[in-house]
Each structure stands twice: as structure tokens, then as C-alpha cells.
Length: 328
Image 1 (cartoon, helix red, strand yellow):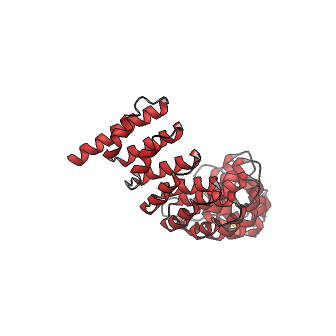
Image 2: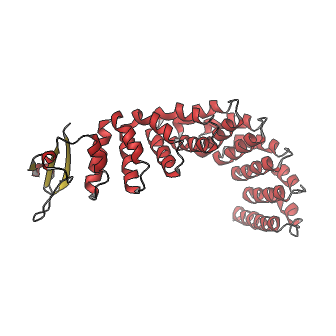
Image 3: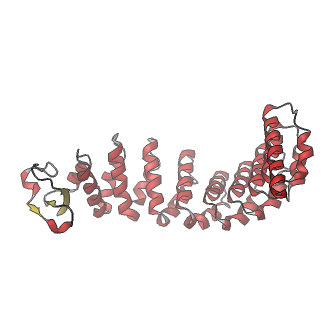
């Protein structure tokens, strides 16, 4: 193999390349044609194998490290396993450079990166997620399959990676909303909320009626993040849920939507015996800014719960400010 690495040449300094044995250094050639601004020294590492390049990403010279990482990226699939091992190093620079090389390799690195998602070391999983997100669409099928794994950490890292891939992952995530496992549907709804693509609105509206409360919660929260007003009527229905952990995300979502369609339902929620729901309703009404809520909110100024009181006072200030702006 004949790998070529470049390093800036500075007159008066002795350069030793990669600190390799003499027989591996090759010939040193001045090559001023490489740049119009600075002369370079060119090192031919003809005797340098892949292990040598892996060692070189630990070199004290940062320029040598970078060039070794790029050379490993050019090697493709044979370099994947050594680079995955390098992701486990304590040296953060080595981890980043190994990640750079794996990202350059791309599709061929996917199987080993998927395995790295099971590593106990959080940083290794994080780097694997980031690289898979960079690789993008080719990694989607395997990432979606990881959502069904029993390990919740693997599930969430997969969902995070799919959310980072973004719009190319939307169709696969929409299909996953129909998966038999509640946790797959939950993670998929969360990822769709992070991507904020309006193609997901109708499927998420259907998921608000899912048999599992956690899926309903995630779907309502995702709809709020996407912010499409088509969801307002559906979220108003979710306010009739008996579980506050479903109602409150629906309240937040309605507040984010800023739709006045469900103001009456939100006002009704102010009467709920659960402080969490009263707090969520007051917060949502403040964001919507409809003056119809002023009187019902005023009745809760002395609510027994401090959080509710603060939410009520904030909401009243916001609605009055909104009235003033409209008047002006």
C-alpha cells in the first residue's frame, strides 16, 4: 500500500514524518506545486500497513493524526473494526478522528456501528449515533429495527439517530407507529416530533387514540412540536382522557398550536381537581391569548397550588398584553 501524508515544512526544522523506521519513511520530496502559499514536505509511507495508520491517529502531531484518519477512511471496510476499537480509547481526539474516518467510509461501516450502539460506554454509543446520522438514509432500516430491542437505551439512541437523519426517515417512522410493540410506537412518535415534518400529522392524530397511554402522550407531544393546526380538534378530544399524563401533553400541544378551537375545553380543564391539569390548562390559555379565558383564570388567582397560581398570573399578563397589541 502506498499512503501519502502531507505536513507543513518549516525551514530550519528537522521533520520526521510519522516517526517510522527509516525503511518505512520513504523518500522526502519538496513539492511546492501543492500550494501557492506554503511549501510542503511529502512523505511516502509505502511500507505502512493499516495497523500503522491506526497507530498514527494517536501521534502527537495533530496534522499527522488527521491525515492518518483520512487515509483510513479511504481504505473502506477493512479499516472499520480497528476504527471501532479506536472509538473506545480514552483520548477524545482519537475517538473523534476514528469517527471522522468511519463517517468517510460510510455504508460499509453500518453493521459495526450498529453493534457499537450496544456498547456500555455512553461516548461510544453517542459517536456511533452521530456517525450513523451522518451516513443517513442507508442506515435507516437497521436503526428502525433497533427500536424493537429490549434495551431501552438502544431504543432511545436509535430514535435519536433517526431524528438526526430527519426527513428521509419520516416514512419509515410513520410505518413504525403501527408496530405491535408500544415502545416502538412511542419512540417513533417522539422522533417524528423532533423532525417536525407535516407528513406525520395525520398518522400522529391516529396515534392519539392508541390503546397505550404512553403512545398517546408521545403522539400529543409530537403534534405540539410540529405545530400543525389540523391537530387542534384531535388534541381537544385528548383532554377528556382520565390520565393527567395524557391530558397535560395535549394541553401543552394546544398552547403551542395557538388555536382558539379548544379554548372552551381548556377553560373546563381549569376546574379539574388535579393541579397538574389546571397548571397545564392555564399555561396553554396564556399562549393562545384568547380574552374569553380572563375571567375563568381570575377565579384561580388564589389556587391552593403555587405552581397553578404562577401559571394563572403569567397567563393573565400574556392575554392582556395580547389584547393591547391587537388594539394597537
